[in-house]
Amino acid sequence: MAVPKYKTSKARTRQRRSINMKLSAPTLVECGNCGNRVLLHRVCPKCGFYRGKQILKPEELA
Amino acid sequence: MRHRVATKKLGMMTAHRKAVLRNMMISLFKHERIRTTKQKAKVLRSIAEKAITRAKVDNLHNRRIIAKKIHDKPVLDKLFKVIAPRFAERNGGYTRILKLRQRITDAADMVFIELVDRKEKAAKSKKKTVEKETEKKAPAKEAAAKKPAVKSEAKKTPAKKSAGAKDVRTASLKNEKTEEKTEEKAAKKPKEKTVEKTVVKDTPKTKAKKAAAEEKKA
Image (tube, rainbow over the protein chains, first blue to last red):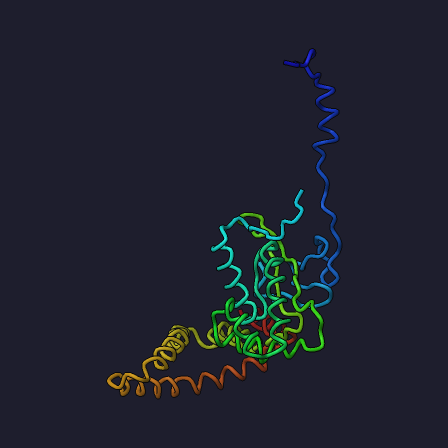
């Protein structure tokens, strides 16, 4: 059976992980109503607005 | 390859899935907006829109086909008489999916799925909020001694009302209930008057002034 000849060095492991396990920050935009940072295409969880309309009433939030 | 795989299983067996989607479709047509997960909403969109398209032509055949899925007569009638005519001019795209935030428990993507021409029941919701506000504020304004009395009245009245409405048929309880009702009315009338006054006063601007005044007093 084919078996690795050499142990994977710390450097090689880390090089691989630096690319393949990279975390990315979510893209956020400012809510048009309250300026809160929101995920794209999402109803603002703070003020309940989406595309200039009140989707969630204030008492429905949280 | 997922060629020729049309169904999304949603992690359920066939019967379960059918039942869930059927109930959701009924809820959607009943309430015009429901909150579910994104995956369910996308499957629901497909079947609900097909139902609306078919409901545009109101005949026995179409009614029977849709009645297979909508086991709720009032909702079936609503679909054919109210919802479908509203969409007469629109060719598809009757529903809208609005993405909300993830559910806290399992991080599922939550969405609203709603009928595109859904209208807010503004009057109702406003009334509710007003009532809530007044319930909170009215006792605060009155003297401390009156507080418990007002609260207990507020709690009792809705319970009594519903009970009274249900038990109207039972004649034996009638007399007692009617007595209670009259008492309620008597108790309610003065309350409502005070409530109205508070509503007028409690605009946002005056609120701040009042708060300041109260602080001064204290």
